[in-house]
Every structure is written in C-alpha cells, then in structure tokens.
Length: 192
Length: 192
DNA sequence: TAACTTCCATACGCAGGCGTATGGAAAGGC
DNA sequence: GCCTTTCCATACGCCTGCGTATGGAAGTTA
Image (cartoon, rainbow over all chains, first blue to last red):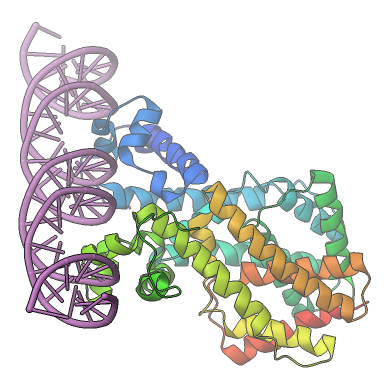
C-alpha cells in the first residue's frame, strides 16, 4: 500500500501515529489560507519541529499532499455516514442534513479542498468519488421521502450543489435567518 | 485614479492599451491552472515578450493581480447585463439564463476566480459585489414572473448557488442531458 | 552495554520566481 | 535631424521554499 519500502515496523500501524499530526496541520493550514499556506517548513514551525521530521515521515511534498487529500476523503466519508444519528422520518432527516450544512458552513473543508484540487485530474477524481457518495446518500433520502428516482435525483442534485455553492459565497446574515431561509428552500424541494 | 505617477500620456487612455493583453493572458492562465500559473515570466513567454514589458506596465505582481480581478469584475458585469438579448417573457428569460449557465459552464471564470480570491478579504469583497448584482438580477426575474419578494429571493438564491456549485463539480454527462435536467430543476423553482 | 531503530535537529545546496538596473530600438514631436 | 517618449530586452541579485546529507538523542533489543 505504502510507497515507502523501508522495513516494516514491528507494531501494528505506528507509521500513521506521528504522521497524522502533519496531516491535521496541513488541513488546518489549508482551511486558513489555501494550499499555498501548506508549506513543509511552516507546518514544521506550527508543530514545533523541523523539516527533518517531515522528510522522515514523507517522501516529498507532492506525496504528502496526496496523503492529505486521502486523509480528508477518509474522514469525510466517515463524517457523512457517521453523523447520522438523525431522526427516523426521511423528511425530517432531509431537514436535519440541510441544517447541518448551514451550521457547519465555516468549519467545512470543502471549498478549500475544491479550490486546491481543481486543476489536478487525479485529485479531482478523488473529490468526485466523495461527491458521488454524498449525492447518493441525499438521493436516497428523497426516495425514502416518497419521490420517484428521477424526482429524487433532481432534488438531491439541486440541494447538494446549492449547499456547495453556498460555501463559496460570503454570507453576512445571522445564523437563525440563514436557517429559516434554508428551511424554506427545503420546503420548495419537498413539493411534489 | 492610477497609482503610477508618471507623466500623463497625451492621448485619451492608452495606458490600458497594451496592458490588457497581460490581463487577458492572466485570466486565461488562471482558468487553465489556477492563480499559481499566473507568473509574470510565464505570461511573458505566452505573450512572446520579456519581464521588462511587464514591469513597465505594472508596478509589481500584487498590484497586477488586483487589476486582473477588477478587469474580470468589469467585463463580468458587462456580460451579465449585456447578454440580455433574452426573450421578453420573464419565465422564458429565466430558462434562457439557466441554459446559459449550463452551456457556458466550461468557459466560466467563476470557480477560478473564487478559488483564488477566497483567502483575501479585499478580493472577496469585490467578488461579493458581483454576486450581489447577479443575484438581484435573478431575483428581479422571478419577481417579474409573478413571485413575491420573499419567494423570489428564495428561488433566486437557490438557483444562483446551485449554478455556482455546479461549476465546482466534475460533470461527465452530455450537454443535452444536462440541459434537460436543468430545465426540470427550473420547473421546480417555478412552482408556486 | 553494545547495537539497532526511531525520530528529529542542523546545515547546506539548489532552483524558481520576483524585482531592478540599464540600455536600446522605434515612433513621433518640433 | 535631434530629443523625448514609449515600450521592451538583457542581465543580475535576492529571497524563499524544497530536498538532502549527516549527526545525534532517546528508547529497544539482545
């Protein structure tokens, strides 16, 4: 799996142990200032170590960034599917998901990930895979709410891309107003 | 207006004359590979000249990029408002705009502009101004189509952000399929 | 305690991209 | 026909960030 061909460590998987802190630092830096801020020496300073550490854990910056994307993809699928301690009624689930989208707006990595990966075919495909998973999840919600496959597709696509677009727009409104608006928009999507 | 304090040229406004080619080259490079590809030496190579030209026309890269953004903003408002040789019926105008969004998807600068400006307050505000103009245009279309102000706001926001999100997603479908889908989605938005 | 592994510090070389200094060609003005 | 202005070429210095080489500290194993 790993490209590094050094001897296998004795314990189960200690490779990720300290490498993870680099990955987390990268995601944080990415969210704050874009991929341009993800520089090995800067991350090292953030982590209180030196480049020596980085180049022990990772081959080079390029491979590191690949791992960063995969790392995001992993915990991204986990979050979407894991966070589903949602209500039982499908309509209410749709509302809950929509509310989640609005609330987690600022904490969301999506716009940063997309802005970064937009110009790399490989990375674009990784993101597309995540999109597919999320879309199908949304579509199934609409189907469970009683919509036909075509109808559910339409609504899920509309909602998902709407949510994505939302994140790229500067919004100044207070949270409760945004939530009410989102609610009204979901109403629209729930019409037969 | 201009920050350069050299003597005023005799003719009306020749300053932009040759500077525009740099701005256009910048937009093209931006669309192809992101802001990272907008390097003065690379643009120079694209234009068949050297850096000497660049630093005659512009103070430095930073100010140049500011001008690039303003340049985009200008022709962006012109396009949105100028392209309105659209039909008379408001509903048909909405459809026409939606179709335009789908068709010009690839040619659109928006995702590249946003990916670039996302981490700069000043630039973000410039983009927000454009967003406002476009949104109000869309909202007025829905109002003209008979919707209340609130209702039109809702629908315009939904449509605009949907269109924005669309551009960040890798789409593999053929054009006519995408157009039909967009049509069905506009139907949804046009329900009372 | 000697050897080995793991993890990081230090120091350096190197390339790329920015900006500047300077000269020069072409095109008018007078 | 000179002088000025406009525009660009050439050449250079500099700084930043990447990667590498090497050593060393702490823990582990035998």
